Length: 152
Image (cartoon, rainbow, N blue to C red):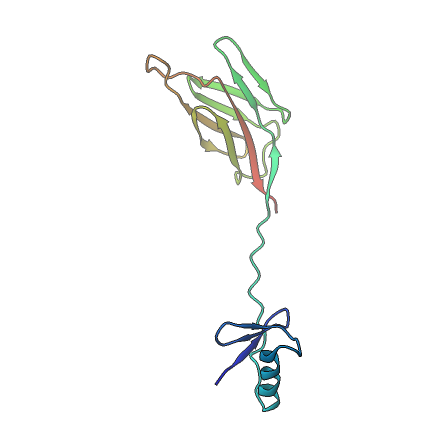
């Protein structure tokens, strides 16, 4: 016995997977109408569960476009803030205005392997892993950091 189910677009699905448009000239549709007239009841359309809504990340600070050279540390920082250089490849970066909490993350762009190693609402720490030509650690030529948090 053939069974049918309705879809969101009023196309009937047959149990073998065929879709039947509601067209009186379609022989499958005519067979469906005859089946329905004989007491057949199609399975109702059941909408799928909606996808959970995830808010896109919201930029909260374009925090620090840094250029490091042997003699200068130039910070292009529209969000404001200060920094401390703890050693080669180690930086502490402080927000001008603290974040509401420490629920943020950093996107760091550089030719070096850089990671945020610690973060609080007041500051975050970055460690850059880059070996110089002689194998000793060195600062990356430049890197930029963007701080993001999920909008609530």
